[in-house]
Image 1 (cartoon, rainbow, N blue to C red):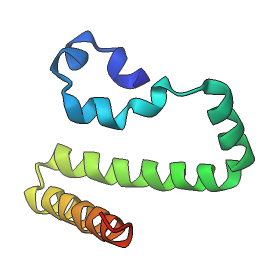
Image 2: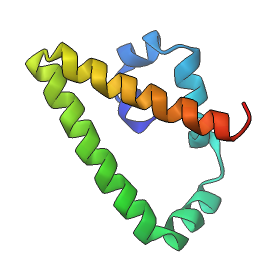
Image 3: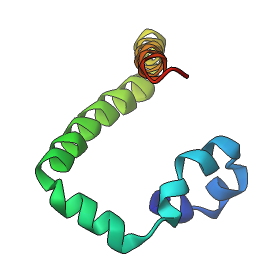
Image 4: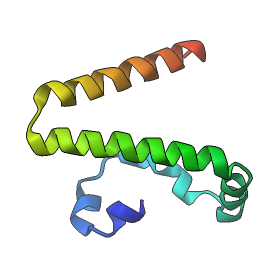
Length: 89
């Protein structure tokens, strides 16, 4: 939310999916601070993995590497579909 809100044009084009994925930004800051601090090691490790994946995805976009972008998205879809299936949704 902080990144997108720095660019008013980005907020102008944001749609329902963005509203869904940014809903935690409206949550209680004290509660989330406690969650992050209680789980700081695991959160830190996940942030590092996210940074690595994001850098690889950006590099694929910068290169115009359609196959790598498609692979990234296909893998993400399969992972989410498996996660949702386990939850019975």
